[in-house]
Image (cartoon, rainbow, N blue to C red; front, side, top):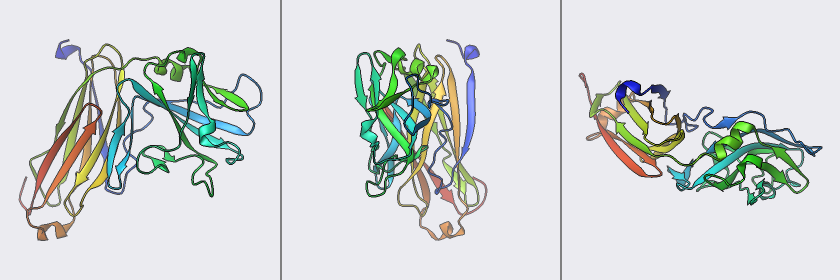
Length: 279
């Protein structure tokens, strides 16, 4: 495909260290899944569902990782119940004519939270949250997804048609580049740029984790990334990291390192922080 046929999808995600929610937006999130075709919902509401080929979660106390293999995907549901003790997270599942797939409320090092989705449903066990996310690991594509439902022992919830269509989508392939400036001055901004090309034959979602080291930060999660990229197209996302702390000037050889991780690879870029002048 020639460059003239490619449509560039660009966006800017301003980033601060304390903002860990990520630039996830509503990628792969579908409508109101609270309806049930088979009677009463029993005090259970499904506010929405999200389908992603992978998810970002803590893989250590101070870094994000990506969970999910090429032939896997996750359905994440925002559920609320009147009595979370009566409806534990693992009591929910995705049911299809080909089998039942149980849910979990724990992914990664911190099972209580998931970037972009907030707190887990039903945790902690001593005082379970009445509303939160549950996640169901599934095969990709999911056999029988056309008839998939979110089920529990005493009822079920229909999934939005768009979510069921996403569950039958096969995996695709991405080419990824990651850029950041070689240097910036104190008072400036490190602008990192992720460019994702979908070189496969089907639409896809690129999921990645961005971690940061320095200046004055030992190592920390920076961003959870999910980018929808149609087949044959290119998406660009920019992430800004201000370098404004005047105490950085007191450090010896200050720099910022950004580590981008996704399922099939990783890239690292390091930016030197200069005391003054133009970068």
